[in-house]
Image (cartoon, rainbow, N blue to C red):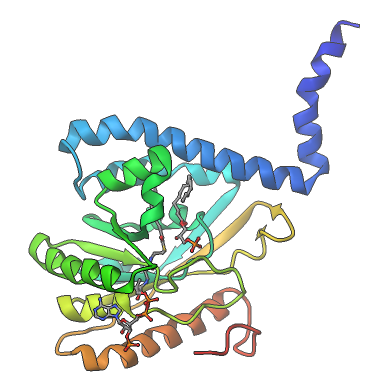
Length: 270
Ligand SMILES: CCCCCCCCCCCCCCC(=O)SCCNC(=O)CCNC(=O)[C@H](O)C(C)(C)COP(=O)(O)OP(=O)(O)OC[C@H]1O[C@@H](n2cnc3c(N)ncnc32)[C@H](O)[C@@H]1OP(=O)(O)O
Ligand SMILES: CCCCCCCC/C=C\CCCCCCCC(=O)OC[C@@H](O)COP(=O)(O)O
């Protein structure tokens, strides 16, 4: 009779073993709640260390996020570290599948590197606040002219403050088994700052994370850092070809490390 009250405690493990949908929602809720908690702890640390908004706070954020992968059963296999051994400013571009990308980003994030994010993230509670403290550049995707002028100002700050920027050139999350056509902002930014581009490719999450099917298993993510693409001497005239070149190299690596071939059914409007 006394053991009866223990039954509710068994419900969570039983659901964990028997329902993939439960695991999916459990992991998603855990991820959001835990990141909010980590952000709440990080906020005073950032304020004490830097007194406010400062790119150096990304070190604290990076340190705080690094262990989260273990709770979600994720592993990263990273190659190409040597390509990040570049001094001065550069623009990192990577594909964007999910908010889980933040975990991979924090595995490899170089010093003095922050990111471009949609302005709505600013309102994501403690996460939004810590993003602001980390110097994240917020853009309004609905107003191209505003977004462009923020990015042009950012190119100047990059040079002046010797910072690096991480941009998701697809401009949105995408799990279609391919890479979406790239927006041009990251390439204008790199050309305006005359800074190299370092592409980083995340393998497909489809072997462990399926949003539609409500599956979130353990898995390994391959993260490949590619050789830098120089922009010295390039002008705005060269942005389209730079964008196409970067897209082609990243797409072929994405298909290769995701175990797909180039005949995959991805977007064809590129
Ligand atoms: C302790 C716990 C802590 C937890 C905290 C964790 C912190 C980590 C946070 C991680 C956050 C990650 C968030 C990721 C995102 O939010 S992704 C979404 C936002 N990012 C982007 O959208 C970036 C990519 N988008 C672009 O670059 C776009 O180009 C944009 C600038 C937004 C403009 O959009 P759009 O009009 O749709 O794009 P086009 O590329 O088609 O551009 C239109 C024409 O404008 C020209 N253009 C673009 N940019 C420029 C520029 N800077 N200067 C001059 N001209 C520009 C472009 O060439 C097009 O003209 P043409 O067609 O070539 O004539
Ligand atoms: C109104 C925005 C509210 C967002 C609330 C999210 C709460 C976040 C809490 C924990 C998650 C931790 C890491 C979050 C950072 C990742 C942000 C992200 O991935 O944004 C998506 C954006 O790149 C593209 O957006 P869309 O795919 O166009 O949509």
